[in-house]
Image 1 (cartoon, helix red, strand yellow):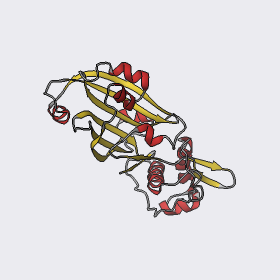
Image 2: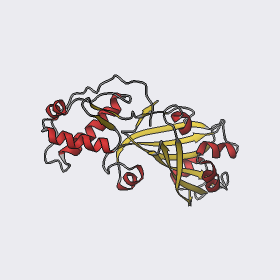
Image 3: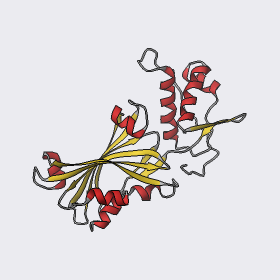
Image 4: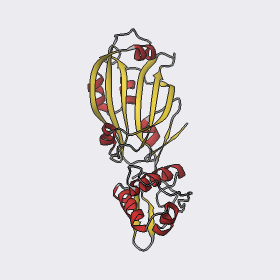
Length: 253
């Protein structure tokens, strides 16, 4: 479970009536709004959310509709209901720092009990114009395209696709399966001092493919990043595209 010492905060936000006939069930709209507000507020485990009656008034709906939205968030593990006491945050979003040394394990070391990675797929591709320019290689250079999933306490947080020059990482698949860590693969190949050269951050809607991987609802908001990692002399070593469940992660820059 994600750890946070703040146990007395309470969610407080300006609600607004949901959109009728918007093509999305009202209770789903409420559930998504609560996910976003909980992430934005940065509340820790144990923070209280408003009562069903208060939420019903904020969204201009009946309590049954609010109750259904809350039950979904409880099933997801985001909230918990304590009989006779109310509804509380079950876990707080991960604070994920984007900086010169962006490392998944280091970012999560004090926020999760277990940190793990999965290899979802790897294949050889030829560098197109964009990848060739970003990696400073010739067009057509053979690259590894590797898709991974990073988890904290068994919860999917980030799915990403990294591009590596094959000649520099000839044993990439075996090395990742052994270490389950891009950082350790870099260290093994002698590139341990790599740093983040550039990160571009955007917001996107979750595709069906990413929804299945991250175990979230298709169409929900996600954080997307495009990054280039470089060596100390500025030589590009990895280009990456990552997608994050926005209700589970807060980016800090």
